[in-house]
Image (cartoon, one colour):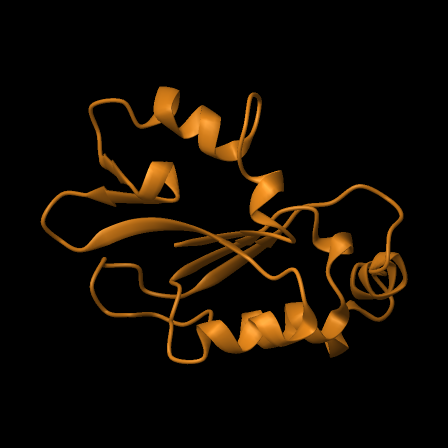
Length: 129
């Protein structure tokens, strides 16, 4: 599973996603790299906190696959970044997940507001899926 924000700074600190994983995953998994990675059981299940601050950062994930892809505050990303990361959303075959899925969370505004609104416009939604 990949959990993305635009910068690592948005993932760290009090009240952040990484901060809350220590409460949620206590006793369930093992934290590595200051909580940027969580590993669960022997099946190879893992959660990776990632970032894409610059347009070209997406290429860091060229050979990766994420059964579950979460892009938090998706409107902070450009359409190019989101579209590229979605190509990494595929079944790895390790975790028993039959189909990959992607979650895009957001608040209004920022650089991706326009593409986000178009994506979730019910009249045009089919062309994005």
